Length: 174
Image (tube, rainbow, N blue to C red):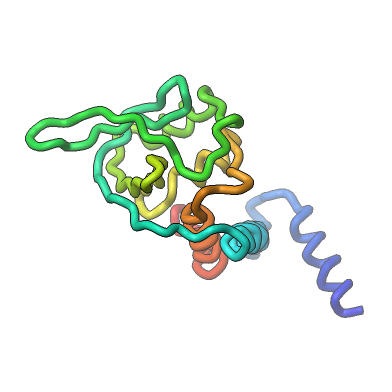
């Protein structure tokens, strides 16, 4: 009885549209945390059943400069005393579902920002911008779907960690 009452209350809270009143009483934050719990549980499940990364990544630093027509991220990486533009394939994205136009829009939002790039032995990478994985932004924006059976689950771990931080700390970007 109590469980069904809580479920109904949560369903009502989630159905309410965002408004200044909802924001003032904290319901909007509660909605965001409920969504984050669902996402955190999903990505944590993928970590539990997925394969573990066997090798450590090579870490590079650079600046996001754009996106290619093939859905790769273009980055300017320092090489000696000059810079080299490289194409970076994001890890754990289903290559068949990448929408280059949508990818371009996501990348435009972070263009010219400094990033850390973790490059894995298969050449795929996780791009970190201000502590957030660009790979996650691409999936959330609908520019690509996550791989159903990835070679490694490093991105799953990053996504789970990101969502658990949202659950515990809220969205600090506002």
